Length: 112
Length: 115
Image 1 (cartoon, each protein chain N blue to C red):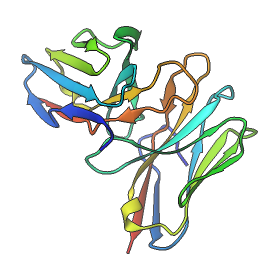
Image 2 (image 1 turned 60 degrees about the vertical axis):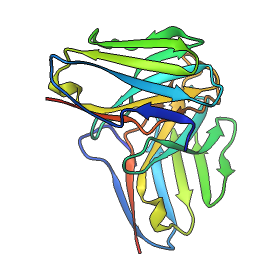
Image 3 (image 1 turned 120 degrees about the vertical axis):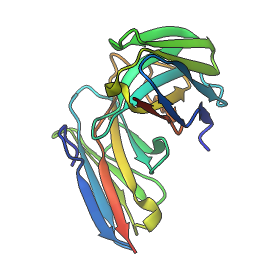
């Protein structure tokens, strides 16, 4: 999972496997969460979001799970493809400031 | 293509130079942001503009000077930078600032190297 530190967490999977990327967020009052994907040489790209009144949300090949009890967010990617290789960030929205706070990121590498 | 365009994509400058980064969004958004992305660190919010008014300045050194002439354009003027300012500078926009479900859309960034 993501944490503040000197090394980005990494996840290596084989093509076709399912991937799970984890994120621990800090503010129990955060009301909205986003997952971003950042490929090499590009800016972060929106993948999926979830409000704090939900536990699960599904998109195309991606599912986000939210556990507010332990302040944990996960992104599940089904049938991972080489094109999914990127850095994945979670972001939490503070209802007081309206600002997004980003996690450090997890490097996902998909091997053919 | 995210609808947010940044130029230049790469910039090398000396510590005594003055340069500017440009961001343009074609999404009809009212809020624009500057972030700094350094290696192995989370995105750092620098400035927020809402309807061309600066609403956030996250203790950024004065050698970084933002400008927002209209809701579609954002600039970051740079002068007398330090080598530690080398990073990827990302621009983002969102429909409004300070609201829930505030999806921010990012440009590809400007890779800045200060020599």
